[in-house]
Amino acid sequence: MFKRKIYDKLVEWKNESQGKTALMIEGARRIGKSTVAEEFAKREYESYILIDFSAAPQAVKDLFDDLSDLNYFFLRLQLLFRVDLIERKSLIIFDEVQLYPPARQAIKHLVNDRRYDYLETGSLISIRKNVKDILIPSEERKIGMYPMDYEEFLWATGDSATVPLIRRCFESHSPVGEKLNRKLLRDFRLYMLVGGMPQAVSEYIETNNFRKVDAVKRDILSLYEEDFRKFDPSGRASMLFDAIPAQLAKNASRYQTSNVLKTGKTGKLPNIIAEMENSKTVLLAYHADDPNVGLSASRDLSAFKMFVCDTGLFVTLMFKDRDFTENVIYEKLLNDKLSANLGYLYENAVAQTLAANGNKLFYYTFFNESSRHNYEIDFLLARKNKICPIEVKSSGYKAHLSMDKFFEKYSSRILQKYLIYPKDLAKDADTLCVPVYMTQFL
Image (cartoon, rainbow, N blue to C red; front, side, top):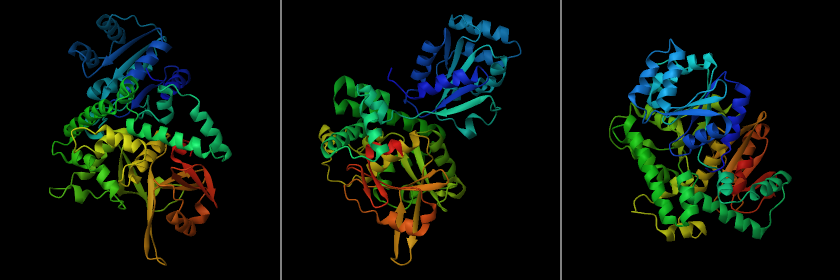
């Protein structure tokens, strides 16, 4: 198993909760939820039972029909799984719990019993379909899990020194040096190409073959599209997903759904988009109509940009029209030699990094009367009682006209301005120019 940061959060939950709550790990498919849950059970408990509701026999499901006698429930559970449960020293995992809602509802009674700890994992937790007939337990806490971030990727490749080094440079505003920066950028581009899906990372480490890595990612994309068809047989969710690279490449002020779905009724479209976001396979950045510290209060649900949850999957999606993404394309991307403007690829990587660090995604567009020009701030972060605007560039050019115009308009609201780009750390007046691999520290 790869080292994952969420493991420490699971240990913290166990120690703080002491059986008073269950923990739900939410995230997209194939990001390692089940693996980390079982590893946590093996290392932190004397015994555990893992109930995988994607394959659980009916005899196990039937146990949840009647919880009036928990002594009998636990007796049958131990017999079915041939595991001895030890009071306050055992964990029961409900894997893919969204597939059997009665088990999720049972958490309330099981937690109140306090004999054992409970961990749930879920993908595609549909608000309308999977919880409409059950009572969501107040005893259930939620924690989001994402694909492996850059530091976890480096850990997987045996590098535990890079991130502490660049963190010190970021905190002291010290450049890393031109030569080292080139290496770090190449390493980060490698991460963007492989991505953070554990299967793809494992394939890269084992084979060092981009074509085989690409095949793994294509399989994952196929799984996602199968999931989309479960809540949207019309295929519109798949079309919206496939069009993400093209939509970002247009550099428009929002995702233009009408250009993707040219025909058909759009009445159910908000629900479809909500289901996609809920699946964790996509990340939505919403337009903040009033860029202030309370960004959520001015969120425009009709104006958004859509990103793929993993930039490695995004790369494969970019070339989905080919049977496979040729190694030469990967090599050119790795060395920053591909002729296409890949600013949107860096934008997706920044979105993924910000989301994995607990940030909701917002952006802002505005029209400047004096210049008669539209401007855009790629991302907005709320920090303290201020906001931090972010521009993302794929070139080393340090111009940030949108940022400057934004500052003219909202200077009293701004704590720090950031330009994320492929060059070394630098200050440009009051704008901090940050290499893309330092995004995690913002």
